[in-house]
Length: 437
Image (cartoon, rainbow, N blue to C red; front, top):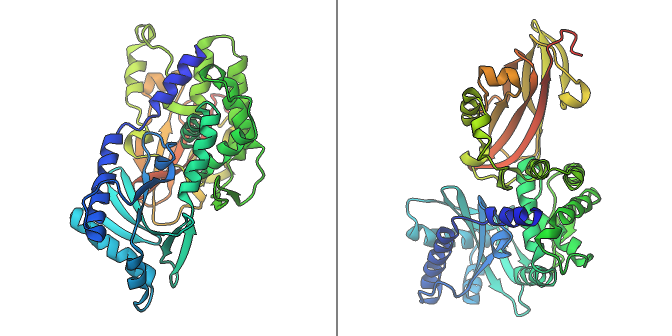
Protein backbone atom coordinates (compact mmCIF):
# COMPACT_ATOMS: atom_id res chain seq x y z
CA UNK A 1 0.00 0.00 0.00
CA UNK A 2 2.77 2.48 0.92
CA UNK A 3 4.48 2.05 -2.44
CA UNK A 4 1.24 2.83 -4.27
CA UNK A 5 0.56 5.89 -2.12
CA UNK A 6 4.02 7.40 -2.61
CA UNK A 7 3.91 6.75 -6.35
CA UNK A 8 0.56 8.52 -6.54
CA UNK A 9 1.96 11.32 -4.38
CA UNK A 10 4.79 11.83 -6.83
CA UNK A 11 2.30 12.01 -9.71
CA UNK A 12 0.17 14.53 -7.79
CA UNK A 13 3.19 16.83 -7.57
CA UNK A 14 3.71 17.00 -11.35
CA UNK A 15 3.48 20.46 -12.91
CA UNK A 16 0.04 20.50 -14.50
CA UNK A 17 0.54 23.56 -16.71
CA UNK A 18 3.80 22.31 -18.22
CA UNK A 19 2.55 22.85 -21.79
CA UNK A 20 1.74 26.49 -21.08
CA UNK A 21 5.12 27.04 -19.43
CA UNK A 22 6.94 25.42 -22.32
CA UNK A 23 5.07 27.70 -24.70
CA UNK A 24 6.30 30.75 -22.79
CA UNK A 25 9.89 29.53 -22.92
CA UNK A 26 9.67 28.88 -26.65
CA UNK A 27 8.11 32.26 -27.42
CA UNK A 28 10.71 34.18 -25.41
CA UNK A 29 13.55 32.22 -26.98
CA UNK A 30 12.20 32.78 -30.49
CA UNK A 31 11.83 36.52 -29.88
CA UNK A 32 15.39 36.96 -28.54
CA UNK A 33 16.87 34.75 -31.26
CA UNK A 34 15.16 36.92 -33.86
CA UNK A 35 16.60 40.09 -32.33
CA UNK A 36 20.13 38.89 -31.60
CA UNK A 37 20.79 36.12 -34.16
CA UNK A 38 18.29 36.80 -36.96
CA UNK A 39 16.80 33.32 -36.56
CA UNK A 40 13.43 32.18 -35.29
CA UNK A 41 14.71 29.12 -33.48
CA UNK A 42 12.71 28.24 -30.38
CA UNK A 43 15.53 26.23 -28.82
CA UNK A 44 18.93 27.67 -29.71
CA UNK A 45 20.84 29.70 -27.12
CA UNK A 46 18.31 28.96 -24.36
CA UNK A 47 18.83 26.92 -21.20
CA UNK A 48 16.09 26.19 -18.70
CA UNK A 49 17.63 26.62 -15.25
CA UNK A 50 16.43 26.71 -11.64
CA UNK A 51 14.07 24.06 -10.27
CA UNK A 52 12.27 23.68 -13.59
CA UNK A 53 15.54 23.15 -15.45
CA UNK A 54 16.71 20.58 -12.89
CA UNK A 55 13.29 18.84 -13.13
CA UNK A 56 12.65 19.23 -9.39
CA UNK A 57 9.78 21.77 -9.55
CA UNK A 58 6.26 20.85 -8.45
CA UNK A 59 2.82 22.09 -9.43
CA UNK A 60 2.33 25.71 -8.42
CA UNK A 61 5.92 26.68 -9.15
CA UNK A 62 5.96 30.47 -9.32
CA UNK A 63 9.53 31.34 -10.39
CA UNK A 64 10.59 29.91 -13.74
CA UNK A 65 14.18 30.58 -14.72
CA UNK A 66 15.89 30.55 -18.07
CA UNK A 67 19.17 31.87 -19.40
CA UNK A 68 19.65 33.26 -22.87
CA UNK A 69 23.14 33.16 -24.35
CA UNK A 70 23.91 36.48 -26.02
CA UNK A 71 26.60 37.07 -28.67
CA UNK A 72 29.87 38.45 -27.29
CA UNK A 73 29.49 41.33 -29.73
CA UNK A 74 26.63 42.56 -27.52
CA UNK A 75 28.96 42.43 -24.50
CA UNK A 76 31.60 44.46 -26.32
CA UNK A 77 29.04 47.01 -27.51
CA UNK A 78 27.35 47.48 -24.14
CA UNK A 79 30.67 47.82 -22.29
CA UNK A 80 31.52 50.89 -24.39
CA UNK A 81 28.56 52.76 -22.89
CA UNK A 82 28.74 55.12 -19.91
CA UNK A 83 27.34 54.34 -16.45
CA UNK A 84 25.78 51.13 -15.20
CA UNK A 85 26.23 48.98 -18.30
CA UNK A 86 24.66 45.98 -16.59
CA UNK A 87 21.42 47.91 -16.13
CA UNK A 88 21.60 49.05 -19.75
CA UNK A 89 21.84 45.43 -20.89
CA UNK A 90 18.86 44.36 -18.77
CA UNK A 91 16.85 47.33 -20.06
CA UNK A 92 17.66 46.40 -23.65
CA UNK A 93 16.46 42.80 -23.19
CA UNK A 94 13.37 44.03 -21.35
CA UNK A 95 12.44 46.35 -24.22
CA UNK A 96 12.76 43.55 -26.76
CA UNK A 97 10.45 41.33 -24.71
CA UNK A 98 7.93 44.15 -24.41
CA UNK A 99 7.43 43.83 -28.16
CA UNK A 100 6.38 40.22 -27.55
CA UNK A 101 4.23 40.96 -24.48
CA UNK A 102 3.12 44.61 -24.73
CA UNK A 103 0.37 44.22 -22.11
CA UNK A 104 2.41 42.26 -19.56
CA UNK A 105 4.47 43.75 -16.74
CA UNK A 106 8.16 43.23 -17.48
CA UNK A 107 10.90 44.37 -15.11
CA UNK A 108 14.66 44.72 -15.44
CA UNK A 109 15.09 43.38 -11.95
CA UNK A 110 18.64 43.37 -10.52
CA UNK A 111 20.12 40.38 -12.35
CA UNK A 112 17.25 39.19 -14.55
CA UNK A 113 14.45 40.39 -16.75
CA UNK A 114 11.23 39.24 -15.08
CA UNK A 115 8.11 38.66 -17.19
CA UNK A 116 5.14 38.62 -14.82
CA UNK A 117 2.39 36.32 -16.04
CA UNK A 118 -0.65 35.38 -13.97
CA UNK A 119 0.34 32.87 -11.24
CA UNK A 120 4.01 32.71 -12.23
CA UNK A 121 6.90 34.74 -13.55
CA UNK A 122 9.60 33.86 -16.07
CA UNK A 123 12.99 35.27 -15.12
CA UNK A 124 15.35 35.64 -18.08
CA UNK A 125 19.06 35.75 -17.28
CA UNK A 126 21.00 37.36 -20.17
CA UNK A 127 24.42 35.69 -20.21
CA UNK A 128 27.64 35.31 -22.16
CA UNK A 129 29.21 31.84 -22.34
CA UNK A 130 32.89 31.68 -21.42
CA UNK A 131 35.21 29.13 -23.04
CA UNK A 132 35.08 26.99 -19.87
CA UNK A 133 31.27 26.89 -19.93
CA UNK A 134 30.69 29.46 -17.19
CA UNK A 135 27.99 32.08 -17.66
CA UNK A 136 28.95 35.73 -17.28
CA UNK A 137 25.85 37.70 -16.37
CA UNK A 138 24.93 41.25 -15.28
CA UNK A 139 24.21 42.37 -11.73
CA UNK A 140 22.78 45.89 -11.89
CA UNK A 141 22.58 46.37 -8.11
CA UNK A 142 24.57 49.21 -6.57
CA UNK A 143 26.79 50.56 -9.37
CA UNK A 144 26.68 47.40 -11.44
CA UNK A 145 29.07 44.48 -11.80
CA UNK A 146 29.56 41.21 -13.66
CA UNK A 147 29.06 37.83 -12.00
CA UNK A 148 29.58 34.22 -13.02
CA UNK A 149 27.53 31.06 -12.50
CA UNK A 150 27.69 27.40 -13.58
CA UNK A 151 24.15 26.19 -14.37
CA UNK A 152 25.17 23.41 -16.75
CA UNK A 153 27.56 21.94 -14.18
CA UNK A 154 24.83 22.05 -11.51
CA UNK A 155 22.26 20.37 -13.76
CA UNK A 156 24.77 17.67 -14.75
CA UNK A 157 25.75 16.95 -11.12
CA UNK A 158 22.14 16.56 -10.01
CA UNK A 159 21.37 14.36 -13.00
CA UNK A 160 24.35 12.09 -12.27
CA UNK A 161 23.27 11.35 -8.68
CA UNK A 162 19.63 11.11 -9.78
CA UNK A 163 20.50 8.31 -12.19
CA UNK A 164 22.76 6.56 -9.70
CA UNK A 165 20.05 6.66 -7.02
CA UNK A 166 17.48 4.90 -9.22
CA UNK A 167 15.80 8.27 -9.93
CA UNK A 168 15.04 8.81 -6.25
CA UNK A 169 16.88 12.14 -5.88
CA UNK A 170 14.50 14.32 -7.89
CA UNK A 171 11.44 12.55 -6.47
CA UNK A 172 12.62 13.34 -2.95
CA UNK A 173 13.36 16.95 -3.97
CA UNK A 174 9.75 17.32 -5.10
CA UNK A 175 8.35 15.77 -1.92
CA UNK A 176 10.49 18.10 0.20
CA UNK A 177 9.02 21.06 -1.66
CA UNK A 178 5.51 19.91 -0.72
CA UNK A 179 6.61 19.64 2.92
CA UNK A 180 8.30 23.04 3.10
CA UNK A 181 5.32 24.77 1.48
CA UNK A 182 2.93 23.05 3.90
CA UNK A 183 4.88 23.88 7.05
CA UNK A 184 6.59 27.16 6.17
CA UNK A 185 10.19 25.92 6.14
CA UNK A 186 12.20 28.83 4.66
CA UNK A 187 14.13 26.98 1.96
CA UNK A 188 14.79 27.88 -1.65
CA UNK A 189 14.48 25.23 -4.30
CA UNK A 190 18.24 25.30 -4.80
CA UNK A 191 18.84 24.68 -1.08
CA UNK A 192 16.45 21.71 -1.09
CA UNK A 193 18.14 20.23 -4.15
CA UNK A 194 21.59 20.82 -2.65
CA UNK A 195 20.81 19.09 0.65
CA UNK A 196 18.98 16.20 -1.03
CA UNK A 197 21.95 15.82 -3.39
CA UNK A 198 24.33 15.72 -0.43
CA UNK A 199 22.19 13.06 1.26
CA UNK A 200 22.20 10.72 -1.74
CA UNK A 201 25.82 11.41 -2.63
CA UNK A 202 26.94 10.17 0.78
CA UNK A 203 24.30 7.42 1.08
CA UNK A 204 24.00 4.54 -1.38
CA UNK A 205 21.43 2.59 0.67
CA UNK A 206 18.58 3.55 -1.64
CA UNK A 207 20.34 3.25 -4.99
CA UNK A 208 18.38 0.11 -5.83
CA UNK A 209 15.18 0.99 -3.97
CA UNK A 210 11.89 2.41 -5.19
CA UNK A 211 8.56 3.56 -3.76
CA UNK A 212 8.24 0.68 -1.31
CA UNK A 213 11.24 2.06 0.62
CA UNK A 214 10.00 5.66 0.67
CA UNK A 215 8.52 5.66 4.19
CA UNK A 216 11.95 4.87 5.65
CA UNK A 217 13.75 6.99 3.04
CA UNK A 218 11.86 10.21 3.72
CA UNK A 219 12.20 9.66 7.48
CA UNK A 220 16.00 9.45 7.06
CA UNK A 221 16.04 12.51 4.78
CA UNK A 222 14.13 14.56 7.35
CA UNK A 223 16.51 13.37 10.06
CA UNK A 224 19.42 14.44 7.85
CA UNK A 225 17.92 17.90 7.35
CA UNK A 226 17.29 18.21 11.07
CA UNK A 227 20.94 17.46 11.81
CA UNK A 228 22.27 20.20 9.53
CA UNK A 229 24.25 22.96 11.27
CA UNK A 230 22.68 26.41 11.42
CA UNK A 231 24.97 27.98 8.84
CA UNK A 232 24.35 30.75 6.36
CA UNK A 233 25.16 28.87 3.14
CA UNK A 234 25.91 25.51 1.54
CA UNK A 235 27.86 24.73 -1.63
CA UNK A 236 25.83 23.92 -4.74
CA UNK A 237 26.39 20.58 -6.49
CA UNK A 238 28.65 20.75 -9.51
CA UNK A 239 29.71 24.37 -9.02
CA UNK A 240 30.43 24.98 -5.32
CA UNK A 241 28.60 28.31 -5.68
CA UNK A 242 27.06 29.56 -2.46
CA UNK A 243 23.46 28.59 -1.74
CA UNK A 244 22.20 30.87 1.01
CA UNK A 245 19.54 30.11 3.58
CA UNK A 246 16.87 32.63 4.56
CA UNK A 247 15.94 31.10 7.89
CA UNK A 248 16.01 28.05 10.13
CA UNK A 249 14.43 24.87 8.82
CA UNK A 250 16.06 22.29 11.09
CA UNK A 251 13.43 22.19 13.86
CA UNK A 252 10.61 21.70 11.33
CA UNK A 253 12.59 18.89 9.71
CA UNK A 254 13.10 17.17 13.07
CA UNK A 255 9.37 17.40 13.73
CA UNK A 256 8.68 15.85 10.32
CA UNK A 257 11.16 13.04 11.06
CA UNK A 258 9.37 12.30 14.34
CA UNK A 259 6.00 12.19 12.61
CA UNK A 260 7.42 9.99 9.85
CA UNK A 261 8.59 7.53 12.50
CA UNK A 262 5.06 7.55 13.93
CA UNK A 263 3.77 6.66 10.47
CA UNK A 264 6.28 3.81 10.24
CA UNK A 265 5.18 2.51 13.65
CA UNK A 266 1.42 2.86 13.02
CA UNK A 267 -0.41 -0.40 12.38
CA UNK A 268 -3.55 0.83 10.64
CA UNK A 269 -3.11 1.93 7.03
CA UNK A 270 -5.48 4.88 7.43
CA UNK A 271 -3.47 6.14 10.39
CA UNK A 272 -0.31 5.96 8.30
CA UNK A 273 -2.00 7.94 5.52
CA UNK A 274 -3.16 10.64 7.92
CA UNK A 275 0.33 11.05 9.33
CA UNK A 276 1.88 11.33 5.87
CA UNK A 277 -0.77 13.90 4.96
CA UNK A 278 0.15 15.93 8.03
CA UNK A 279 3.73 16.00 6.79
CA UNK A 280 3.16 16.63 3.10
CA UNK A 281 -0.25 18.30 2.90
CA UNK A 282 -3.04 17.99 0.37
CA UNK A 283 -0.88 16.53 -2.41
CA UNK A 284 -0.50 13.28 -0.50
CA UNK A 285 -3.28 10.81 -1.44
CA UNK A 286 -6.33 11.14 0.79
CA UNK A 287 -7.94 8.49 2.89
CA UNK A 288 -10.79 6.98 0.86
CA UNK A 289 -13.96 8.97 1.41
CA UNK A 290 -16.29 6.61 -0.44
CA UNK A 291 -17.92 5.26 2.69
CA UNK A 292 -17.17 8.21 4.92
CA UNK A 293 -19.55 10.74 3.46
CA UNK A 294 -22.62 8.70 4.27
CA UNK A 295 -21.60 8.60 7.92
CA UNK A 296 -21.03 12.32 8.22
CA UNK A 297 -23.72 14.65 9.38
CA UNK A 298 -25.00 17.03 6.74
CA UNK A 299 -23.98 19.99 8.87
CA UNK A 300 -20.42 18.75 9.30
CA UNK A 301 -19.96 18.09 5.59
CA UNK A 302 -21.44 21.46 4.63
CA UNK A 303 -19.30 23.32 7.14
CA UNK A 304 -16.16 21.61 5.90
CA UNK A 305 -16.98 22.59 2.34
CA UNK A 306 -16.70 26.26 3.26
CA UNK A 307 -13.01 25.98 4.15
CA UNK A 308 -10.58 27.82 1.88
CA UNK A 309 -6.96 26.93 1.22
CA UNK A 310 -4.08 29.26 0.46
CA UNK A 311 -2.89 26.86 -2.28
CA UNK A 312 -6.10 27.51 -4.21
CA UNK A 313 -5.73 31.29 -3.99
CA UNK A 314 -2.00 31.80 -4.61
CA UNK A 315 1.03 29.85 -5.76
CA UNK A 316 2.93 28.75 -2.65
CA UNK A 317 6.73 28.91 -2.65
CA UNK A 318 8.01 29.34 0.89
CA UNK A 319 11.29 31.26 0.93
CA UNK A 320 11.14 33.32 4.12
CA UNK A 321 10.15 33.26 7.78
CA UNK A 322 7.31 34.92 9.67
CA UNK A 323 6.53 34.79 13.39
CA UNK A 324 3.16 35.50 14.97
CA UNK A 325 2.42 36.36 18.59
CA UNK A 326 -0.94 36.39 20.36
CA UNK A 327 -1.97 38.84 23.08
CA UNK A 328 -4.60 37.40 25.42
CA UNK A 329 -6.91 40.06 26.90
CA UNK A 330 -9.68 39.86 29.48
CA UNK A 331 -12.07 42.79 29.72
CA UNK A 332 -9.60 45.06 28.03
CA UNK A 333 -6.61 44.09 30.18
CA UNK A 334 -3.70 42.20 28.64
CA UNK A 335 -3.10 38.94 30.51
CA UNK A 336 -0.15 37.52 28.62
CA UNK A 337 1.41 37.05 25.18
CA UNK A 338 2.17 33.73 23.53
CA UNK A 339 3.95 32.70 20.39
CA UNK A 340 3.18 29.04 20.81
CA UNK A 341 0.02 28.84 22.87
CA UNK A 342 -0.33 25.09 23.03
CA UNK A 343 3.23 24.54 24.24
CA UNK A 344 3.12 27.16 27.00
CA UNK A 345 -0.52 27.20 28.07
CA UNK A 346 -2.52 23.99 27.47
CA UNK A 347 -5.98 25.58 27.40
CA UNK A 348 -7.25 29.13 27.03
CA UNK A 349 -10.26 30.25 28.98
CA UNK A 350 -13.60 31.21 27.47
CA UNK A 351 -14.44 34.91 27.18
CA UNK A 352 -10.97 36.13 26.24
CA UNK A 353 -10.05 38.54 23.45
CA UNK A 354 -7.15 37.44 21.27
CA UNK A 355 -5.00 39.71 19.12
CA UNK A 356 -2.79 37.84 16.66
CA UNK A 357 -0.03 39.98 15.18
CA UNK A 358 3.06 39.62 13.03
CA UNK A 359 6.07 40.26 15.27
CA UNK A 360 8.85 39.47 12.81
CA UNK A 361 9.35 38.60 9.16
CA UNK A 362 12.33 38.65 6.83
CA UNK A 363 10.19 39.05 3.70
CA UNK A 364 11.29 42.19 1.83
CA UNK A 365 8.55 44.81 1.72
CA UNK A 366 6.12 45.54 0.21
CA UNK A 367 3.89 42.54 0.90
CA UNK A 368 0.43 41.80 2.23
CA UNK A 369 -0.76 39.56 5.06
CA UNK A 370 -3.61 37.03 4.81
CA UNK A 371 -5.11 35.18 7.80
CA UNK A 372 -7.09 32.00 8.24
CA UNK A 373 -9.06 31.08 11.38
CA UNK A 374 -9.99 27.40 11.59
CA UNK A 375 -12.38 26.19 14.29
CA UNK A 376 -12.46 22.49 15.11
CA UNK A 377 -14.35 20.19 17.47
CA UNK A 378 -17.97 19.35 18.29
CA UNK A 379 -19.03 22.93 19.01
CA UNK A 380 -17.46 24.15 15.77
CA UNK A 381 -19.32 21.55 13.73
CA UNK A 382 -22.64 22.66 15.21
CA UNK A 383 -21.96 26.35 14.67
CA UNK A 384 -20.20 26.10 11.33
CA UNK A 385 -16.51 25.54 10.76
CA UNK A 386 -14.72 28.73 9.74
CA UNK A 387 -11.74 28.61 7.49
CA UNK A 388 -12.02 31.44 4.99
CA UNK A 389 -8.99 33.41 3.88
CA UNK A 390 -9.17 36.91 5.39
CA UNK A 391 -7.42 40.01 4.04
CA UNK A 392 -5.32 41.89 6.53
CA UNK A 393 -5.85 45.39 5.07
CA UNK A 394 -2.34 46.42 6.09
CA UNK A 395 -2.73 46.06 9.87
CA UNK A 396 -0.64 42.87 10.19
CA UNK A 397 -2.96 41.67 12.95
CA UNK A 398 -6.18 39.73 13.48
CA UNK A 399 -8.63 40.05 16.40
CA UNK A 400 -10.60 37.03 17.62
CA UNK A 401 -12.49 35.86 20.72
CA UNK A 402 -12.55 32.59 22.69
CA UNK A 403 -16.25 31.82 22.40
CA UNK A 404 -16.35 28.01 22.50
CA UNK A 405 -13.98 25.11 23.23
CA UNK A 406 -11.92 23.13 20.78
CA UNK A 407 -8.42 22.77 19.39
CA UNK A 408 -8.54 25.63 16.91
CA UNK A 409 -5.71 27.29 15.02
CA UNK A 410 -4.86 30.50 13.18
CA UNK A 411 -2.60 30.63 10.14
CA UNK A 412 -0.76 33.66 8.79
CA UNK A 413 0.47 33.98 5.21
CA UNK A 414 2.79 36.57 3.66
CA UNK A 415 1.95 37.33 0.02
CA UNK A 416 4.56 39.02 -2.15
CA UNK A 417 4.14 39.55 -5.90
CA UNK A 418 1.01 37.37 -5.72
CA UNK A 419 2.96 34.41 -4.29
CA UNK A 420 2.75 33.03 -0.74
CA UNK A 421 6.39 33.19 0.36
CA UNK A 422 6.05 32.68 4.15
CA UNK A 423 3.51 31.03 6.44
CA UNK A 424 3.11 30.00 10.06
CA UNK A 425 0.48 28.49 12.31
CA UNK A 426 -0.38 29.14 15.94
CA UNK A 427 -2.57 26.69 17.87
CA UNK A 428 -5.50 28.06 19.85
CA UNK A 429 -6.71 25.40 22.34
CA UNK A 430 -9.81 26.69 24.14
CA UNK A 431 -11.23 24.86 27.17
CA UNK A 432 -14.65 24.92 28.81
CA UNK A 433 -13.35 25.20 32.36
CA UNK A 434 -13.01 28.72 33.71
CA UNK A 435 -9.60 28.14 35.25
CA UNK A 436 -8.28 26.94 31.91
CA UNK A 437 -7.27 23.48 33.13
